[in-house]
Amino acid sequence: MASAVQLSDYAGAALRALRRETVRTTHALPAVRMLTLGGASPAAADIANPAIRTGSAAHGAAILDGRFAFCGDVLDTGPDGDPWTSAAPSRTFAAHLHGFSWLADLLACEDDTAADRAGTLIDMWIATYGGWNGFSWAPEILTDRLHAWLSAGPSVFADQPGRTLSLVRQVRHLARTARLAPDDLPVLRGAIAVVMAGLVYPGLSRSEARGLALLKQEIPRQILPDGGHISRSPEAAADVFIDLTRLDQMAEAAGRALPDCVHRALDRLGPIVRFFRMTDATLAGFHGGGEGNKRAIETALSVNNTAKRTFGFAPHSGYHRVDAGGASIIMDSAGGPAGPSSANAHASALAFEFSAPGGRLIVNCGWSPDQPPSWRHAVRATAAHSTLTLEETSSSRFVEPGWKRRLLGARFSDVPGQVSVRRNEEEIGVWLEGSHDGYREVFGLSHRRRVFLAADGGDLRGEDALFRPAEDGPPEDPETHHPFAIRFHLHPGVRASLSRDAMSALLVLPSGDGWRFRTDGGPVRIERSVYLAAGAPPKRTAQIVIQGEAEPYGAGERPPNRVRWAFQRLGRVGSATGKGE
Image (cartoon, rainbow, N blue to C red; front, side, top):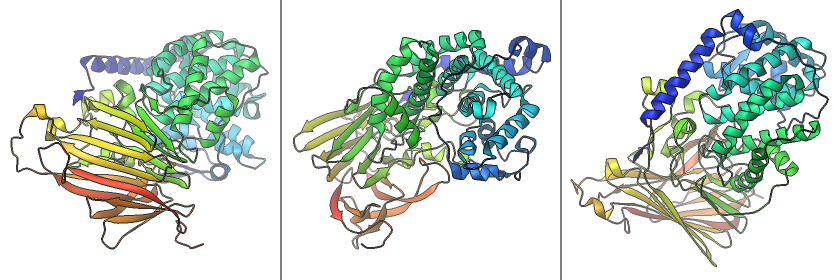
């Protein structure tokens, strides 16, 4: 294991916390707000303001009726109620509410009153929180709100000087405080929001200059050379790609030039977003990300002339991808990210997702910010991923609750010191062989995984092994055995049934395509699981589990320390609903 927290991390987090508290304290004074946020309200430029992220009309209809449902909680205000004077069910709910990401849903509602209700809700917010509020003006919440308000455009803000004045005051504040967001992604998205506002309102040139400076600083730091985001989250990369695409469209419409780093980032982001898409065009669920906004990703890809190159290894992001016969596998082949970005990362070393032409088959539990926060810590653990877990311990450790977590956030404290994956491509298929030492320090064993996908995409074979590195010498107690579990979480659309001898299982996709799972390490168990990557509410699903007890020594070349398994395509066998043809 390697420590992921250094003394400099404590100093940096303490300084950031102090600066945030200073901002909250000083901006409680009217004189400070007048000095930093005041100024004339500029007129909006007549430029295209594309809303790439479109909302859900069904969710919008519920909001129109006064029913706000986020993060597993509900606030019902009635059709004409004021949500800003009602107690929020939770802090996470309040952050979602004040972030206004639901505004796109309301505006997507096919009702003539939707735009008026959107404006009324904004006016109510301004009346209650428009002057100042330490919580709702926090940079990470303010960033979401400005993206939502700018996307609403003229339908809500045209000929509305009060709303425009509030928006530009918030832009001025975010331009000064975006870098104080608790992790990396909101900092970059905050810079993008400020520059967008500068394009829409040319009078915000000073704030726009601050946003551009932050953009030039954060894009090279956060967007890796292979296009991935520093957090290693596929959805984070997609979110930045969507936002930068919209920014680029707005700049082109305004006849303005953006820094070269924006276009270089777009050139890298497009291919990596394609890399992370599974056969159903949704994203693989790794490191705090979910399936993503499928329509927005499609739109961003369609308007960008980024190269449609294909590649199998993203070395900086730390993933391998294999495509064969319409099937795809993506494997996490690196340790966790470092610093603030690991606050949302998962202990998923050597986990993989697998999708076939008939649909997604093997997944991780994933995550979406719409989910109840009570699930957050559980789905970050190794057991929530399709990989091996030793003694129900995660391959990466998290900062323990207490003052350290309050200061640093729930980031990684320790990560595997070595995660390596080798790739071997042959005519018959592709081999991936990887290992990590996340269990070596505590249990004296390392995990090795070998995966093979046949050239026709119909045969996925694997081997998981636990071995003691030779240089560690003999174990202290050779009689101690370590229980392990190998999990394969199934997509909610897959129906699973065990064979009579419990050594294999039949898996049926929604398309009716059948797959047979076999192992030499049985018996196999089918247990309950949950899928959170598709957004709320959590979806029930199942997982295939192989359990065993590993010996504390050996090279992992024989049972019980070695388990072989395979997924083999059978053809059309029925439907996942249980109904025949």
